[in-house]
Amino acid sequence: MDLQQMDEFAKKIIFEAGSRIRQAFSYNLVIETKSGANDLVTNIDRETELFFIEQIKAFDPTHKILGEEGMGEKVETLDGVVWIIDPIDGTMNFVKQHRHFMISIGIFVNGVGKLGYIFDVMREDLFYGIAGQGAWYNDSPLRKLQAITMEEAVIGINSHWVAPNRHIHHEKVIDMIRKVRGTRSYGSAAMEIAFVVSGKLDAYVSMRLAPWDIAGGIIIAQEVGAIATNLHGGGFDFLHQDTFIIANPAIHRELLEKYIVPYE
Ligand code: IPD
Ligand code: CA
Ligand code: CA
Ligand code: CA
Image (cartoon, rainbow, N blue to C red; front, side):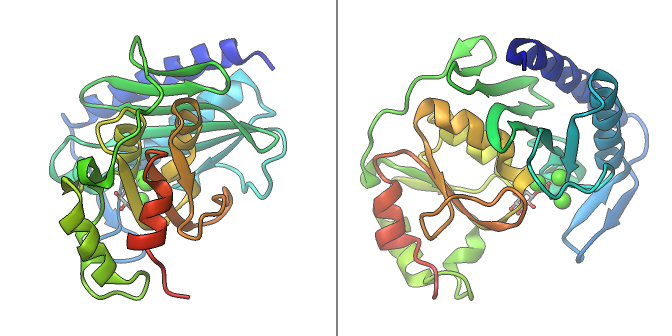
């Protein structure tokens, strides 16, 4: 497996997909809902996923593609080379703001994350990581995360979890908000993960993410020492949805023990 060659190819198609998405704003978006009124998908999400599938299959027909919009084959195992793709992460931002959305891609070889990409389409900013070789933000290497305290931390969290909910003890989340320097909510899991691995946020928490939301980010995370687990502290299952936390290594444990505490 030539990681170098695969990395060059992945970057090429990510930049190309980005430019196609930017051009799409000059014609009409077709917006539909999926599981509910706030779960949006557009023709561009689907067209971008199809573009990736066609390009990857032409590059190597044995590679498998697990994409959010389900335009590829059914992927039931991580055997072989599997690309896990979110063609647009932050579709609501894409529709509403025309910015703050990412392409997220993780490439796994026999279940091991090898190449991870998060691309900010409108800023043309690429965060990426190559297993065992490091991580970069465009041309600059990303540093290992430096230790911080809870008092210094800025945490990415959705405001839903501050209200009573069936997932976590919301009063502990309020304690966390009082303790930390600040909280943020960007509306794109991949963007928030990209911010954690580059030290612009110190943690990001979600009650339900899918493999394509985190696959790119988790590979970059390994290279900078960010810790990513589910809310029980275990590994994320790349074929199903799960809870998720990614954090600076100095505060990951404290967050799970004191502040982000799931029921059961
Ligand atoms: C969503 C975004 C959002 C997160 C949701 C995801 P999508 O992805 O990442 O920030 O809160 O859980 O589903 O649907 O825009 O690709
Ligand atoms: Ca979606
Ligand atoms: Ca997503
Ligand atoms: Ca998506």
